[in-house]
Image (cartoon, rainbow, N blue to C red; front, top):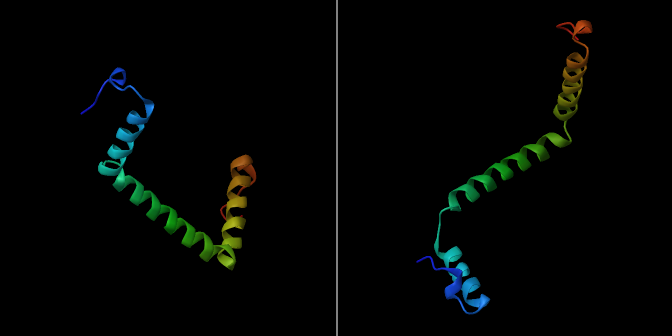
Length: 79
């Protein structure tokens, strides 16, 4: 059903054909649904951790990790 652009006399016909195909085809539907689920789960975790002690502990732990990566000779297993 693909047509050459030369067959179209007006740009509106090409746009209308594209809109019809977008409404009928379902090729990318699964990807969009999974992306929305991942975003929703990430948002729920972010809201749950944002104002808790867990969030500050994670931030503190990440700071220690980045400090140890920057200067591994001064890091110990307890720091």
